[in-house]
Amino acid sequence: MKRKKFTAVILSAVICCLNVFSPLISDADDCLVKGDVNGDDVFNVADVVAFQKWLLTETNAPENWKSADFNEDDTLDVFDLCLMKKSLVKSLEIPVIPAPPIYCKSSALYCIDDKTMLYADRINETVAPASLTKLLTASVALYYLSPQTVITVGTELNLVNPYSSLCLIQKGHRIKLYDLLTGMLMASGNDSAYTIAVATARAVYPEENLSDIQAIGRFNILMNDFAESIGMNDSNFTSPDGYDAENQYTTVKDLLILARYAFSVPEIREITGTYQKRVVIESGEVFNWTNTNNLINPESKYYCPYAVGMKTGSTEYAGNCLISSFEKNGKIYISVVMGCDTSDDRYRLTSEFISQLNANNENITTESITTTSLTTTTTVTTSAPPVTEITSTQPVSDENVWSVKPMFSDETAVAMTAEDSRIIQNYCYGSKYENGTGDCLSDYIFTTGAGQKIYYHSECGTFNDIVNNRSYKVVDYQRDEINFMLNKY
Image (tube, rainbow, N blue to C red):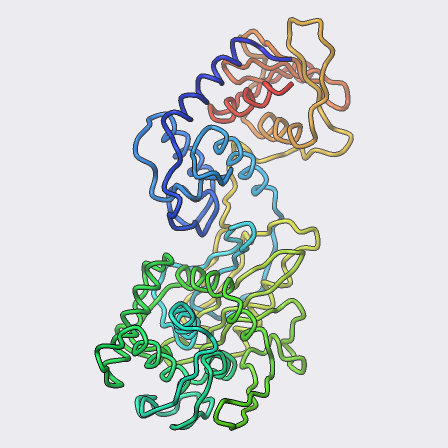
């Protein structure tokens, strides 16, 4: 069934959108949180409202336009809006999961596949990066050099800070970049980080005959330029190993961006997911390196079969830190834990994140995970806060699929899909109700799985439940989605 008047309105709107919003810049930065139009690191009803307002006003594209491109066609239009609304409704039905208090400064849990921030605690606060910096060092080196490049270790080892973690390479060793990355990412060797940095800078600037210190300075520039290019806008790096420095800082949000990029690099993914490795370098020396990440240590009490890699970090400024990647329910997740009081705490919190992912491959969030710093306790609210207008109070069951037909039509009612039935019920029963039925003349009849009739007026967005003598009025954008949905039946 199709109502000609409504179809014409929809087609006009679609044509207008398609004409106004031609394909956008295809090389724009990818979004961190799908649907986060307003750039606050949360996908909620405010983003839907902002995007809908933008579609109507035809102003310049929002800064985070890529996050609204649900059709992934580099074009923003009414079809993206409809998918955005459905995605939001689905995200609001995720279960609430408790967690014990754990010491840390900031943390986050993110799903790469869904581009969803499942948990966020102070992700925009400045933190020291510690050895997590080495993920950036590896990314930059592999951007400019082949992993098979043979590098000779030199006097740059004199620049390594005392009491650093080392993989024990020595001046004169000849070693492939891949093996240097292995020593840096598995054994967290600061010596390897400096050799990688100097070799990369000299390869990029061969005509400058750089000294060790100059090469490190050049590499720092390469690091910061690269970080900015992938979307790390609140970070500054002054060393390849992340050793504490006053002007070296990052945020959990930026570290998520870095981790997502690093995970896409096969060499980094392979190295960080390896627990132990015997390496014979080009000059003949043999090394046996063990990963500092206890999540992939089969003998550790924190061993986790879902963990697939990433990096530890620990300094006086940073505290105990850990970026983890793991695969569960067919999806890839990244967690970042910064500033924990003890090494155990970083593994406990990460393990808690992993354990909270349910077995049904659905997104999860946490309404009240309490994370405690050394001096304060903060209760963190969910990344998808409850929205009164669309919170379902009557979940759809298999027996509760609705059907629909025009009010003044002899046509037989058409059964709706389970998904559309769920959306209609969420909007209807989740809206504020008034006693008595509305004055609007209904033009659609919904029939519930139990046979009850619910009357709907498409222009004012009102459901009338005559049996219970109630009317439910949805908000404007919900009405628009319902009307667009009805055009299918």
